Image (cartoon, rainbow, N blue to C red; front, side, top):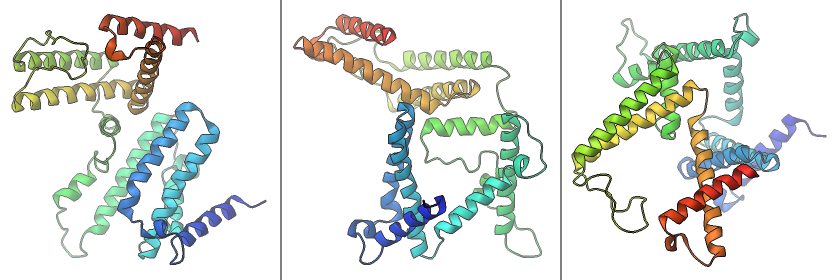
Length: 308
């Protein structure tokens, strides 16, 4: 029976063979940039398998995600940057260095204490990188703006990740240094404040009463009041503030906002498709149903789920 190491080495060798001159034409022509969309796609497929608690599917999806690591590592090795061995060494060192309460004599008895230690160690690592990057001269050089930002509390939070996740990480970093609401009630007060500000901007910016709707069934983005560019920018700011507060409420409750919204999206999709099927059984489409009928079907879909 092959060991875990032997299995991993076989996967590395297969990836190397695929990228060889006589390997797969598609694999050979890929670049770091061309593979990025697949990495994102595979990550979301892993998350979906976890949400479904589909363990056989998760096994395959994790393999697909690991393939991305092997692919990047092989391309980097070909260009002389690093190899998968360097990736593994870096990972092992990081795990040991950031868990001194396991591999050293640091005390951390709670998850909160572990997270505080983790953030402190990450900050120390950034400082060491900054010092190592400075020119070796007699005078201490002044770090440029980008490097100074990277050393800050919020440095290293990627702007490329989904916005909800970025908001969660930014607010978590700030909370770790004490910049946080004292209790969840403060967040609900902030939510009410931001909601009021959005309503005020909406009222001031609409050319018609926001309560008026055009005739017809469509409501999603149909017949919306027209805004000036300046008003639209202010509304966007206020909506963004609302999202940020909601992310902080999720963080305060130890919930993942990305996961929570994803589950709600799937719930909405499931219920709406149930409604569509009921209408289809009657030979109709949602466009042919009144808003009152759609609302009634929506309530039926909710009751139907609860009874299962």
